[in-house]
Length: 171
Image (cartoon, rainbow, N blue to C red; front, top):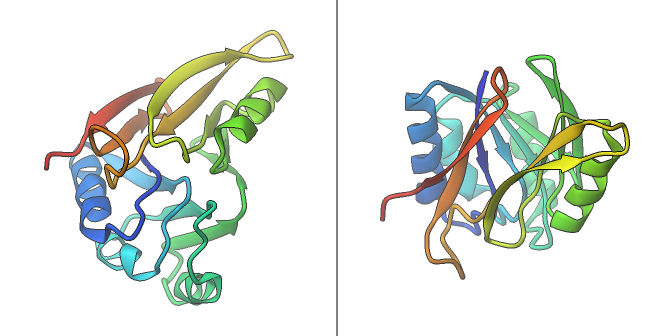
C-alpha cells in the first residue's frame, strides 16, 4: 500500500489537493496528514479525490468542531484522530503526531513500524534505532504549503517496501 504523507498545509487547499492527486496517480491509496491543516475548507478538494485521510491536529488548531462535523459527514473518508493517532494499515503499525520531538520519542519505543510528524516545515526520512534492538522509520514530510521553506514538499511512502521519498510540489 502506498501513502501520501503531508503536513502543515496551513489553509492551502489547492496545494494539498495537488499533492494528493499526484500521489494518487502513483498508486497511493491513503493520506496521512500530520497537522496544521487549519480550516476545514482546506480539505474539501482533497476529499473529492475519494481517498481516505487520517488527520491529527497541530499547534494551529482551527475549528475542531467543524473538523469533527466534516469527518462525520465524509462517508468514512476523513478520520480525524485529534492530537495523535495510532493506526494500522497494510499490517504496519503507524503513529502520527505533529511534533518531531514526540515523533522521535514514539519511534524509540519500537512499538511502531512508522512514525510520522510535521511542524518543522523541513522534510526528513530516517531510521531510528529503537529500544527493542530494531529500527523504526521516522518521517516528516515538511510543508505541503511551502511556508517558511524553500519548497513545498510531501512524501510518497510504500508500506510494502518501507520506502519513503520526499517529493517537491511544482509551483
